[in-house]
Structures are given as C-alpha cells and as structure tokens.
Length: 214
Image 1 (tube, rainbow, N blue to C red):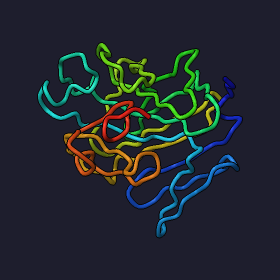
Image 2: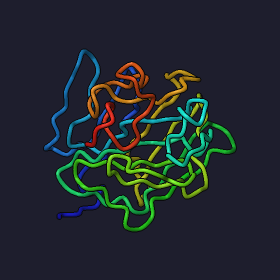
Image 3: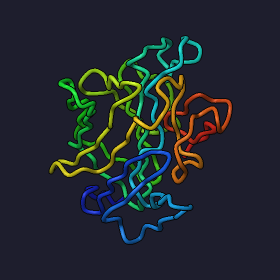
Image 4: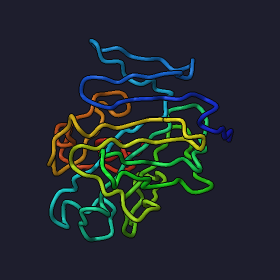
C-alpha cells in the first residue's frame, strides 16, 4: 500500500455550502464536475462528506457514536473521505472552529499514524465511547475533549502541519436546528442536504447515506 503525505498530492480550499464550492491546486488526475454554476470537488479529492452539528434529541435517535447515550457534544461528528488513489497520512493536521469570538480554537489534532486508506472514510466524533463498526471506517474523538459545534456562525477548518488550509465547512448557510446531519447527495459529489432528504436515516457516520460501507 502506497502512503503519501496529503500535502504532496494537492491542496483543496472548499467553502462547502449549497451554492458554491471552489477547488484550488487540485490533483491533475481529478475530474471536476460542473452543475450550473456549482463546481463539485473531484472524485480524487480529500473532502468532508457529512457533518452532524445538531444531534437529534433522544437516546434512541441521537446516539451517533453508539455508546447508548445521546449527548449534544459527544455525538457531533465530521466525516472525511479520501477519494485519492493513495493512502493519506494526515498525522498532525488540526481542526479549528472559527466562530469569530474568543473561544475560536483548535478542537482536534490528528494523532501520529492517522492514515486514511484510499476510498475510505474517517469519522471524528466530539467524544464518548465509540461503539460500532461505522462502516469499517476510521473513528476518533476530539483531542480537545469536544468539537463543541454551534448550530450557526461557525466555520470548520482543517490545516496541514505547515499551517496550509486544506478544507473548510461553513455552517452559516445551513439550518440552525436541523436535528440531523448535513450530507452530500449523491455521496462524495453532491450538494449538502439534510440527511432525511435522502432516506430514513438522520445520520450515517462512516458510511454512505443509505448506511452501506464505502
């Protein structure tokens, strides 16, 4: 298995919203798809595919991390997908949550040995005891103890070890209280929609929208 540092392949700066998605310095093997004035990320990109910043209420419906208890912080998650042809080493990359206030800070640093295989996902949860297979995807909890995502006014940003911006997710254009995740539809290439728009599930950490493995 070939493992390469992510930064050696490309750098994607993507403001993820309903109306726009831009890519810069994309791997030349990537093929962009343009639908109207929307530029979708190439299938060979490193992307955010799903975000749960407002877990549904109730242990029976909001327990995304599988530990048996719905927790407003622990069950938040961000799902990343490696659509490149190689395994990606993102050790030392950090996630910053920018809300324009004093509590904007680093929420997670990917630990040493964080390698995402090609065509596989990594799910970062806010916390808790991760229980389940999550589609055989990698799964971690936030190194800062919580992602602590607000339902509005925040931008999630991933930086590499040199401080270069890799990918961002803008919560501002989305619903303040969806009680479910936002996910790409279709998986990996589509615009972000509320998860119930594509099926009966309210979230699908580490899997496709229908709950099947990548």
